[in-house]
Image (spheres, rainbow, N blue to C red):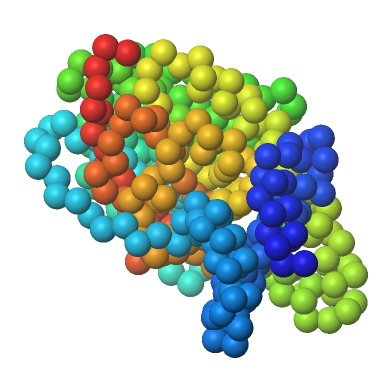
Length: 353
């Protein structure tokens, strides 16, 4: 049974949920199958060593699935000149905690967060749930993160409210911007992907994408209520399942459009952002077939990026083979929002694309 569960979970990563939505739930359960297989391996090694051959074989065959969740990479020496490195920050800033309930426990939180982001040494910043209000010193993010720090900015506006404040995605860069644009989806949504082509000091061009795909649309308190009682499981559980289904389907459409755009890029690609999906999902698998994942290549430990009780890694950086990853880190000590910042340093290793 455990063998079938594991193999089916791996297979379902390749099935688009918009064609068969149950595949999304089966793929989502894959971490449980991986843990069960590891437990069985240890159990049989202790009691019946011959029986351990099957879970051992499965462990070897699915090793790349395990390293999506846990890695033990060690930093390499970095002899490359500092001016050739590309330092990148990807961060869901949660509208800089502008709403009162987000900073009720610490009125100074928005200013602390804005200062930390603005003064970050990254050459490229990809910010999700971005917020800008030019009338307010604290939230004048275009100026504070951009102009005052010598960075150009491109904002993909999902919404402009009644006071003219902007919500959406933003890419800030110290490299000259050659062109910019938006990846359009085939269905109405506030989620989006934006990109810029930047000229590096090496005279090469790099395309940087910032993504925020369809939300999981679930709350931790709903999950807690669903598991605490039979009534909660029937009411909250059904609602959670419905929302997850909608998210699986929406992201499977969105990632197809995104990949079409990436495949047409004339330049090496760096893709950052909030995937809103886990490493065993169809969405992640599709991106991983085309690009390298920075956590898998250079991370250490579990690399959880969600700042909450649910152990999730949903914020990612993916990169083309023409880029070399020098360093990767999830800054779990930075707890301004419900996401942790994701940092990486790259080197473009080839020219004449």
